[in-house]
Image (cartoon, rainbow, N blue to C red; front, side):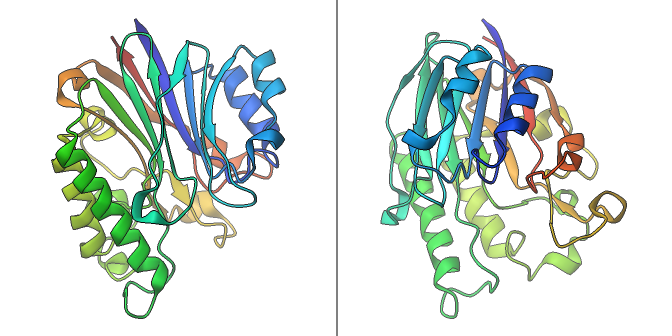
Length: 262
């Protein structure tokens, strides 16, 4: 069963309902994973998504913050969630497809501005979240699984606009990159985006602080699509819809796509 999946930090699904509908109409992924929906589920605009053929929704909501959702044209079942690091945040949800493939949708904490857990509680929470992800996938090693989301780390030198300039900036510090690598190794996860696009600068996020984000192009690849080794070779056609960053009142993230022949 071939299908296309997209992941997108939407930065408020209610504020950007029209953008989600545009993506679903123009690009028509079979599955769309959203992060930072920033709404309790009873306020989520599900009717609009149902009308576009996305009748299956598995989500965890939270008023004003965080929140993750999986919208699908294909049947999916709710397969639970985990409160990593005990933060009480809606940052993880799991859905299972009819073919047995499990989809993990994550929103890893951003970590604040200071890359020091002694000075910055949020950075410590981020590292703890990643450590628990590592341990979880070590003890419950996944198979036939896909992991997507805003992981809030750009791991490779060519995942940021300037490697040296960002070594002390949260999202690209060595301690974060090492922690994300440990999560990837624990689950045997394969980076599908870089499997398909192994070379060159590649970004999925551009700061709102840059008045001309497109020309300045000071981006980072914070959004990821991973798969377990048993299905990684079925992944293909990865791309980042950079144009969505330029839509009216956009998210600061762009959607990341991959297709799977399973």
